[in-house]
Image 1 (cartoon, rainbow, N blue to C red):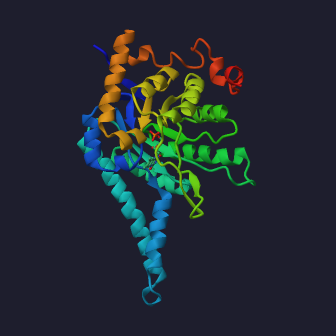
Image 2 (tube, rainbow, N blue to C red):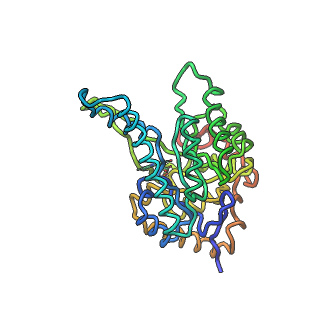
Length: 328
Ligand SMILES: Cc1cc2nc3c(=O)[nH]c(=O)nc-3n(C[C@H](O)[C@H](O)[C@H](O)COP(=O)(O)O)c2cc1C
């Protein structure tokens, strides 16, 4: 019997396919469907601090001077804040009642204060783990790498003090010393790192001369950045690695598992190809395991990681010398 179960941050998953944080994971109906189709876990849509702040500002701007009282503003601000949080907590509770697979909550905050209360409430609501979606764009030339990185550690330390459920950090590759940064996060007690988040990217429309959103969804070719780093880091960190970005089919899933990911997250492929893609990915994984004689995922997870691959230098090569030789 081919068994596609895996473990991620101590959680037992029936499949290594995790549904990544997105609009798809904000409804109980979808969450039920994901479980039915064989998803291993769900990362809920992130609770954004910016979103909460926007709501507060928006509500306040509708006040006319005749009925505006500072106390009223405080009340509205508090209400909006609590309302959002309570909706999110209801989503966690609802998801936990609706399905058996692990529910991973996700928060995107930029201040340690906000994290503190959110994280505790999220644990109390029953989340099985918490994914911290932190991205500080290192665009301020007065801030050095160390100053930017310090924020990640203070957030992780703060949250770790408050909750006992596993914590993962979903990070980007915008670090000057990515390998050391990931290693230090694992030393600091992260139970998992998600490599990598894919952000909103700006583009320029040359006719309207406006800044517009670049491709919202990834394509399968985008798997390569995450694949390299999963392979390079998976057996060097003191925590699990989960792959994200550009995993669109069972082939992408298998590559990431071979590179050492304990699980993968998928989003764009579900938007583009429908939820049936989850069944296809699991079926493709099973078929590949049968073909290669693997009964369990532990038998091959990490077989192609940096330390175990026959030619690990290939992961470190950055110049095209050999390839250009035949083309140029
Ligand atoms: C419409 C949409 C909404 C997203 N919302 C979130 C979010 O709330 N929190 C988060 O951490 N990532 C969010 N993401 C990023 C995805 O979780 C994922 O990291 C990214 O899309 C790369 O994976 P993919 O190649 O499978 O799409 C979103 C992505 C999309 C396309």
